[in-house]
Length: 283
Image (cartoon, rainbow, N blue to C red; front, side, top):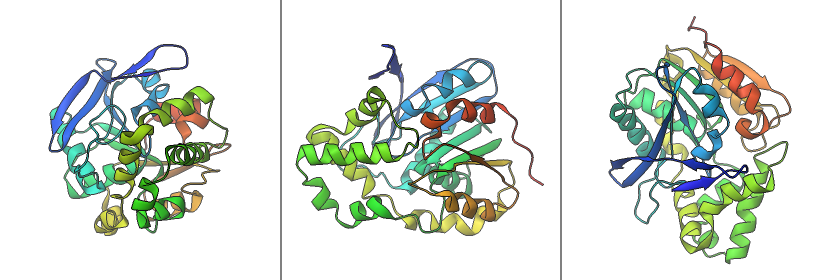
């Protein structure tokens, strides 16, 4: 259960917790500081946080995990991988860790997961940082919408065509470009017949129907909220950041120049600096 890093070290999630549909793997870095939980999106894993998490762990206790159906966590047929189910699991995971009000950081579909957990599952946070994330509105678009509409066609692609599609999607998430070894690490879990099935299994279950129920409640969020957005995000362009900022009126919004969808890859130092700074209280 490891993911090899470019320098030859490994990304290990040594801990496990049983859920309704399989095992979620997780890790804790640092000791004694205020807790912060890092939440990834699709089609990624906690490997996204390999540079940010150790930097935060110098002063914080950092929790990372792979959503069920992703990375090192269990992947098999029949799993409920909807945003609603992942939000319920996230709320239970915080209980498992005995975290009452941690700081929470999320991007991509992780944004929808933590928002739904907070607004509909009573998960409590000290503060919330969301960047380049699904949150609400009309986000079923582009390639994602096609995969949702024609899951059987994509699942039946020859292996080489599937791999090329996933690689192109991953490259599109970075404005500055992914190193070959980084692209390989993100691509590896989705290779082969089992990986291909898992890839389209999770995508076909993601739907706007799971973000609509909490949209009217976004303006009621009272905890400090910080929004970061890559100015060159091609997957969720800047207007999605503006939409969320308008729906959470007290949130602070920061644009990250020369960065795309994956701030962890395009701007890890700037992302870390924001996360180390205190989030301002709600006005």
